[in-house]
Length: 467
Image 1: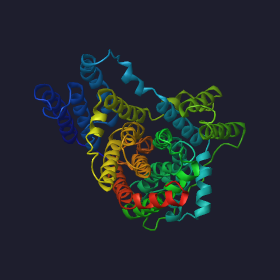
Image 2 (image 1 turned 90 degrees about the horizontal axis):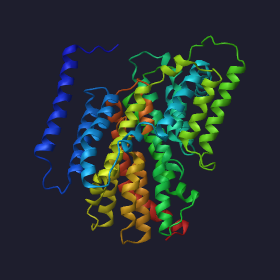
Image 3 (image 1 turned 60 degrees about the vertical axis):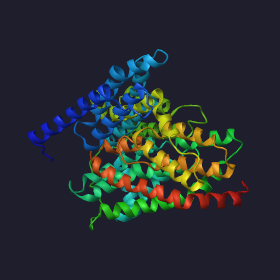
Image 4 (image 1 turned 90 degrees about the vertical axis):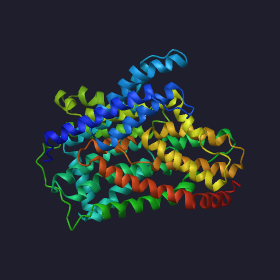
C-alpha cells in the first residue's frame, strides 16, 4: 500500500493553492494583453492552465479539480460572459455533470458490478485464457483485438466498461506490484480509442467529418471510410501491443484465475446475462433506433435494481469519483466553446501555408485540443474551418480524415477520453502510466498521419474513383 507522509501531502496542497490564487490574481491584475483575447477568453485560458497542471501533477484529487472547474466557471467566468453577450445561466455548466455521457458511465459501472456479483466476469476471463493458454503476450493481444473490434461498432466507452469486467479477475491473481497489471488495464482504453477510427460510427468525430464532407458533395460510404482508416488501425494496434509489452513486460508470468465458489447457476444469472446482452444490443443498434447511448444505459440501471439483482450497497460502491472527473473535462469544453477561446485557437492556424504544412498544423492542433477537451468538441471546432478552405476537394478530404483520426489518437490524460477515465477508475494505474504510454501513442499517431497520411489517402481516392 502506498503511504504519503503529511509533509508531502501538505506541500502538494500548498502548491495547488498557490497556483490557484496566483493565476487568478495575475489574470485580474495583469491579464494576457497583446493576445487579442477578451476578458472571458482570458479567464477561460487560466482555468484551462490551472486544470491542466492539477490534472498532470495530481496535487489534489482529480475529482476535486472537476469541482474547481465548475466553481471557477460559475463564480469567475459566468459574470464575464454575461457582460459581453446574452444572459447565460449556471445550468449551461451544470449540464456537463449529468449528461448523456455520464448516464452511459453509470450504466457501464452498473453492468460491471452486475457481472462481478454473479461471477460472470470470471467466466468471460476463463474463456479468454482457454483460447490463449494463459500466455501473457497472446492474452494481451486478444484483449486489444477484442476491444478494437467492438469499438468499431458500439460505443468505445461502453466497450471499455464491459471489457474491464473481463480483465479484473486476471488482476486478482497477480502480484500487486507486477508491471503487467498496468499493461492489461491500459490496453483496454487505448485499444478502444484506436478502434473507434475504423468505422464512421466508431466515434463522434468520424460522424462529424462525414457530415461536413457530405455538405460539400463528398459522399464517403461506410466501406470507403474503412479503406481510408484500416491500414492505420492495424498498425496502431500492433504498435500498442508491442509498446505495452516493452514498457510493462510480463517477465515470464502465467495468467490464471482461481476458481471462486459462486452460487448455483439460476434465474438471477440468466437475468444478469439477459440484461447485459440487451444493453449491448441497444448500444449496437442505438443509432438505428434513434436512441442515445445514455438513454440505453438507463435500462441496466433500472432493471438491475428493479429486479433486486443489485442492492443499495452496490449502488453506493459505484466509482462516483470518476463520473466527476469526466464531468470536469466536459465542463471545460463547454467553457472553451461559449467563451470562443476554442475558435480563437483554431483561427490562429496559418491557413495560407503549403498542403504539407497545413496537415502538420491541423494534426498538431487537433491532437493538443483533444488532449485537454472533448474530441467531439475539437472536431466540431476544427473541421468546419477546414471545410471553408478554397482548395482541391481531394486535399480537403485528406485534411478532414487527418483531423478526425488525430482527435481519436490523443489519449494522454485520464480526462482526455471517456475510456481513459473509466480505466483510471480501476485504480490499477496512475496518471504517469497514462501520460507516458498515451503520449507515445499520440506522437506515433501524429507521425503516421503526417508522413504517410496524404500519400495513402490520395492513392486510396484514386483506387476508389474519388479523384
